[in-house]
Image (cartoon, rainbow over all chains, first blue to last red; front, side, top):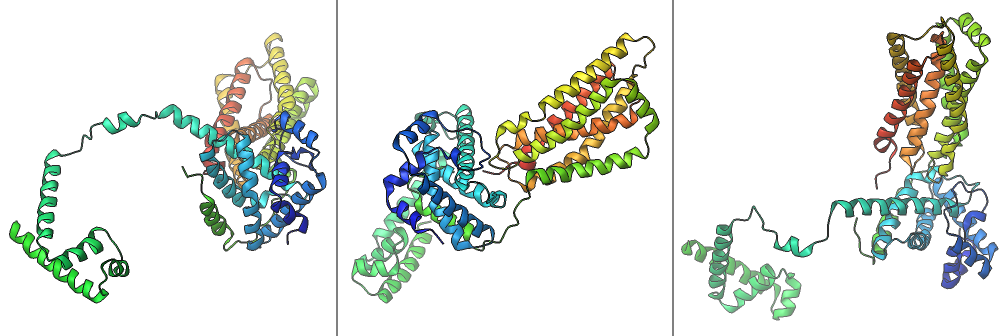
Length: 239
Length: 222
């Protein structure tokens, strides 16, 4: 489905990066406005990007999208996967912080999915994707700014803030229970104590515990059963 | 969302989820065709209302004062161009500049209505709309705009607008202008200052209401 030239571009990462620096406005018939920075365009002119390769890439993505519109899930999966680096690049150019570019990628992938029926094959797919990515990136910036206006980052204040629902008596009772369980556990035979320690407290699997303790699974099960029975009896007596 | 940057696998999961069970989709018709569809419905409503209107009175009124022709032409052009702009803006890759398309026609509509208003003020004995007439105008514009806006929203939702507020506001301008055009069937006098203010309020109300519902009706959940 993918043109051989496109595969070559995907392997040559530096060329792939250069492709993303171009202003796709020259691609035929885009609807979007002039959202590209002038310096990017100047850089493109200086580097003399191979226009044929860019057009070929656009044509390939457009073909994949047409197939996706017809219900070809393999073509759609391939298209979305190929779009991810492009979306990240556009998001970075919008000054989206590194840890937020993945949010933009996910927003854009979901938008492509919802808006895939609006893509007109007579127009450039790259220009279509670029405008969508720009819009979603701007939306994210706005959301972040709104969030920052409402919230403050104060980890010390958060840590020092008293929990009004906390019950000090409950904490003491919990500590007492923990001490009692620990005391009763220590009184168990070593094999039973190991079974409780690994299987219950540390939540290891039966196979892992067998490997750790060099004992058979059956033996561990028997020891765990006996340990729990003994613990139950001793805790009832302790109460 | 708040994801970490090392999120290739998260994207992979999402991509696989989106691609699995992908259904074929019908391609959206061009915005011009969809706008013409909405305008055809408005034309049908106009034909229906024309049966109840006093058409000879309307004709004599329009022929007596050319500025009324301009006002009606401005309103019709605003409705047509705003509908076209709204359907263009509903596309995810639409250029915001489409919002400027109906503005010259809207300007013509406002200026021509203002001239009519001035004449009603200067000419002695001219009919000036009373309060109940002005209230009727308000109710007519809002009453006609509600179903037209509803239809507009249903049609705009098919596209996937990434600027829902602007799209809905321009759609609101189209419906309000269409309603104001239809009002001419039942408005056999020049708009006086109060009447013009009521018309402007009704148009503004429709636009603001459309804008207010845009997030819920046209917005994409992020």
